[in-house]
Amino acid sequence: MRHTPSNMSDQVAKRFTLLLRWTADTFFSGRYGHRAVVLETVAAVPGMVAGMWTHLKSLRQMKTGYGPKIRTLLAEAENERMHLMTFLEVAKPNWLERMIVLIAQAVFWHLFFFIYVFFPRTAHRIVGYFEEEAVISYTDYLAQIDANPELNIPAPAIAIEYWNLPANAMLRDVVIAVRADEQGHSDVNHAFADDYDKGIAG
Image (cartoon, rainbow, N blue to C red):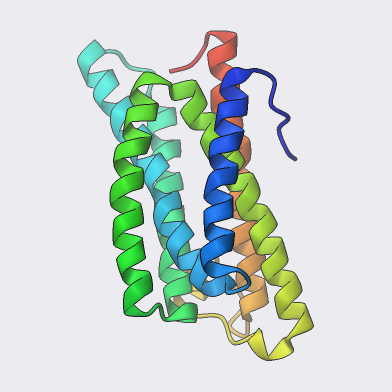
């Protein structure tokens, strides 16, 4: 399900996401495995930033009630980290792509931290839209695998263990599992953004 922007905050979040999408398309085009390595490095940042900040907020305010949100956000970050670990086995990034990963993570960490501290609703909406684009990218990846069966290599052992896949699982099965994760993250972050509109955000 895709969220339609309803106000200026949503429009900013959407346009920011489309800028990131354009950058990924420009650098990686149809090289979806390598694209996943870089994007999953960035995708693992928001959950950690938001979880950490919410944790510190709970400590500062000396209030309970933040636990479920903290656990959800940190679980999201861990899930995205496992996406990265999986695609590292598939794509084998070169030194240039590893440098891009380092630079992208450093820049995006500080940028997203600033956005989350001062505009948390927009930050969650950005992640919601970002994950929507991830779903599209992984759908395109599936189409590429279907059109080129030689790309459908055996699933890495780390993916089989993490998603509890059959021992004979293939890359296509992994991409389907990852896509489902991304859709879940999109739904959760859009819901967190909506909570600010309802006045019940943590």
